Image (cartoon, rainbow, N blue to C red; front, side, top):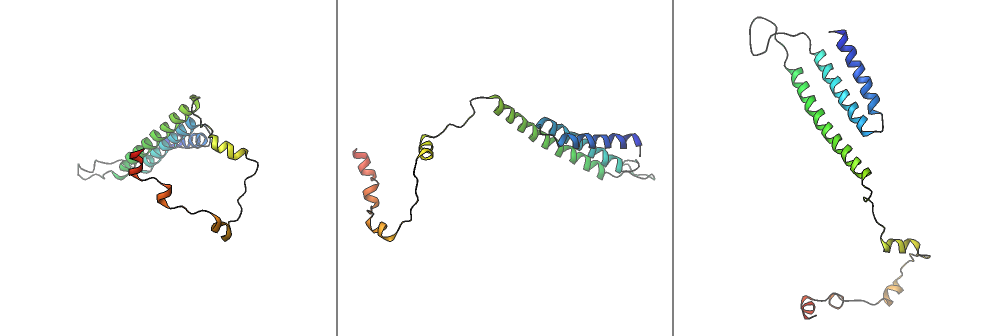
Length: 149
């Protein structure tokens, strides 16, 4: 195992974790890319000695294809998460740049908020007896009545 590649892997992990701990989404994405590439390098270094191709056959020791499959899978996952982080970065940039993206206050909500007294008294049985009752026909007009109007 070459010590230079191990040192490069360690530096990539350290720089990636440092960037992941920042609050900027761009630095978080760069940190994620560094950690992903360092993980690919770790899998590559742990795969062992190189041998002949598994399909060639022969008397030599063959290479294990599983680490290569792991690396390809890690590349695809890193690409997908990076695309998602880029979409988040773009959306946050668009929201910060556009000044018209704000929620307007509702007049009814402001009236309720500025009311001096809001009480939620307990409703008793006597209050319910005094309250007028409505039938659905009396309250909601039928389709025939709407067409006449």
